[in-house]
Length: 136
Image (cartoon, rainbow, N blue to C red):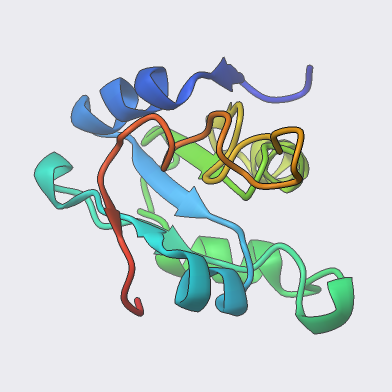
């Protein structure tokens, strides 16, 4: 593993309460149509930086955008979140290479699909963690 570790959604929330910052790496469409994490109870707003752009093209400016939005103090832990926990692994790895202490949220925001293809099994949203259905 080339990042600090994997966290369940509830472990991620505990990290956020302890001062870590959530970085949502999903797409603008996912943020707008599916919802976003609501971290106002943690005193830290989430960062929204797409790992991939429209059409699944990698975001060539990811590290630059992260450095611009994240605290200058790279000792602040970052917790990466995507839809299911896959893109966030790549983002956490890249952020670690850029000098940040980075974690991945297992299950992601929406989690795994059920037998009908719906994302109702697990994940941030399905585990009852705070969400907003509006825009960023």
